[in-house]
Length: 89
Image 1: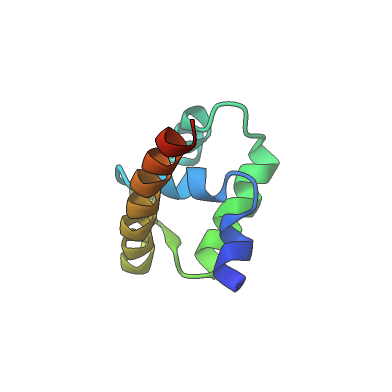
Image 2 (image 1 turned 90 degrees about the vertical axis):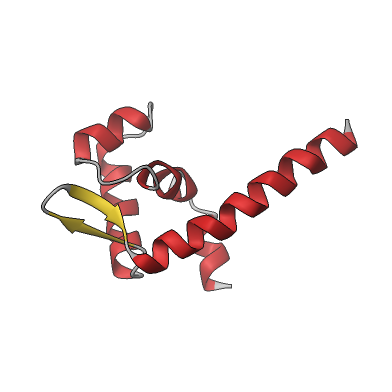
């Protein structure tokens, strides 16, 4: 349940999704997340770092191996969600 609580927070999955492309600086990540406020992005990054899903390195924020593994699972859920959306329309 802790994972679903974290992923259900505003922009948590969006940040994970953006970091799958590789390390990003705070400003790059904020630009990719459009209307996300800096304070919310700071909170999400802190949560993702605290839970071991992301980290800050020399090149910027990036997914940890555990975060990359989670992203792979989310990709499958995303594919299923698209199929589900088509089915219910």
